[in-house]
Length: 114
Image 1 (cartoon, rainbow, N blue to C red):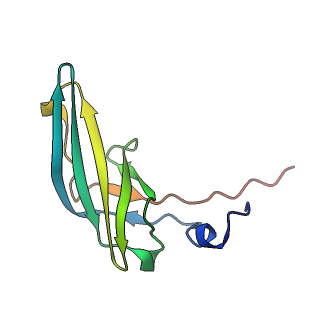
Image 2 (image 1 turned 90 degrees about the horizontal axis):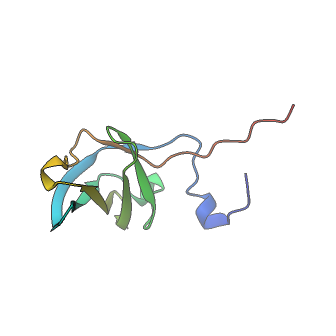
């Protein structure tokens, strides 16, 4: 594994942590000509005790694996982050819910050379 320092190295995991949001709150909507964006605040029941840190990005793995949450506040057993979703029409934006799964991801060890 590359040298990333002690603090960042402590956050690297070989198995991803999978999380469901406990709460989802719509905090902003921008409806412009031709596009719409909605910003949501998501709260997770995981925190520093689970090696979660502020400014960490969580990747959605279900149902939309291209969405991300940027964590802004992290306590021992709680993390809160923002997620922005966009589409041509506001009505087409499906809000995240407790069924969505987010992951920290995991470090993949390089394959041994043959």
